[in-house]
Image 1 (cartoon, rainbow, N blue to C red):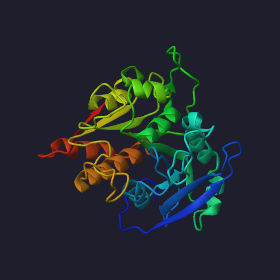
Image 2 (spheres, rainbow, N blue to C red):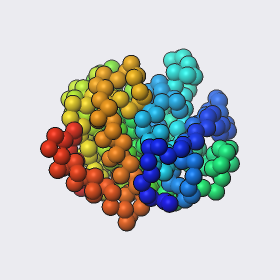
Image 3 (tube, one colour):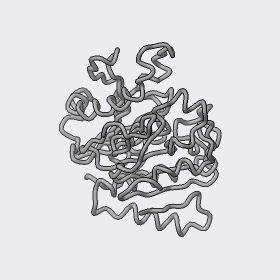
Length: 306
């Protein structure tokens, strides 16, 4: 039944690689699709991985969301270590644009994905689509929510938002470009987001110990997407969390500097509740989850909404 809570013991089917033709990209787009084995009218979450990762990462989130009734689609972007693009590859300066095009290609190709995964045909709800991402992937997803990239003169680039996307979850995403380190200014010019037009509802998640080498500010840099965007937004600040937010990119991953199963479990619960309530306006799970966190005598984080 759409919008209802399932169990983590729910059988999940996962297929990879599902290939979407991508002329002009240099190679076709490979994605992983995970979904509950049963049920119809399933909402869709398109997830953008962080730098270097692939469709094979982020199992703690992808598996959980699928078990909870979502179809999770994970493209492998060109920066993935599995592809091994050298820095001198002519596509490298435009990878940030290719990433955005990857997400749109997934949305354009839902029919192909549905037909390619055994047992999935006819089960997707095209009207309930969300995007999510971690780190660079969160910035990628944010552009579909309405965030734009400023040029060197501070002029916003083109609007790359997508009306098919109804909500987003942005995990440890970059803040304003005015506070970049000289290295980031020189090598990552696309990291100058403007959130002024990011109007689509979203949950922003930041760790209060996430000290990034890309910014001259502290962990509060990661709260900028909430502070400077209009509309219906929520901010979850996780106590003690660094960039991996407790280990969302994978179980026992070396890059996880702040491993915390309890923190990951909280993220699983809250992101699921948020996505369900955002895509099903009558659902009260998000409000209930927010109250539970507020009443927790030893909370792992705090929520703000506007």
